[in-house]
Image 1 (cartoon, rainbow, N blue to C red):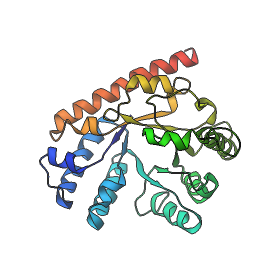
Image 2: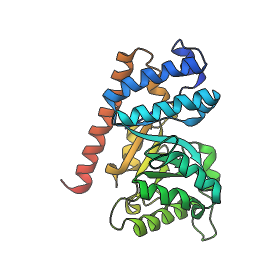
Image 3: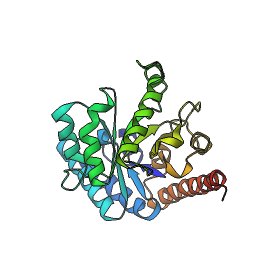
Image 4: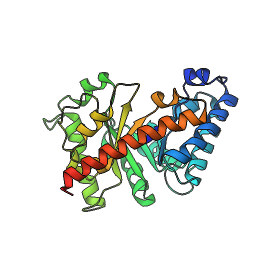
Amino acid sequence: MVWGLDPAPEVLRDWGLEDSPEGLDRFVDTVLGVAAETVGLVKPQSAFYERHGWRGIRSLTRLCAEARAAGLLVVLDAKRGDVGSTNDAYAEAYLGEGAAIEADALTVHPYLGLAAMGPFIRRAHEAGSCLLVVIRSSNPEGRSIQAALSGSGVPVEVDLLHQVRRLNAELTPGQVGPVGAVIGPRDYDGALDLSSANALYLAPGVGAQGATPDDVVRAFADCPDRVMPSASRSLLSHGPNPGRLGEAVASLAATFRERLVLENRGTTGA
């Protein structure tokens, strides 16, 4: 399971913290201590840090560095995506050794063309990290774009996943590749061939956005060993007490481990 570390204004307020760089730093201190004892992956949404200016970006940088030093994997939810030298700069900022805010995985949007993601893909491949392409988002408004027919006559989300599969087959034949996808599990209709893409999947929206563990298990029944379900607000609501927060995170993580391991045994026939 991935724990979303999103210090929204209401979260800081409910925790009795100021909505300020100082309150943000106290939030970071608390969640780092809890995460190191409960989960293997954390996912900060960069916008909640960036809104505090350079001091917020400093907090995000510290969070990523200290989480990785504690043995956690960091999925940076930034949804970057542009063209040419801009993507080179984004990739240099977030992926690989020497990155200013180094993450193990980065979310990107593909709507300037997946081919434009070349700098991201190359750097992720070289660094052994992962690029998570938004293919099916967790918000209902996204359906009008993602389900629309592409020039090849198939839905945009289907076409994008085909491209992900081809890229991974070229880069890491027969293995899970560096290009993954964001797939919202709520109301998933089974239209995507998730098992054949040799990709890792981020499944957002568990909890406050309405997705449930059942939704995740159902959507990723053919590849339960490659999904990373993510919850944020529903878990942060148990803070700021580290004990209560840790219990909530550990409980949901255990639920996913049990459900997805059982599903994987059923898929493999073990």
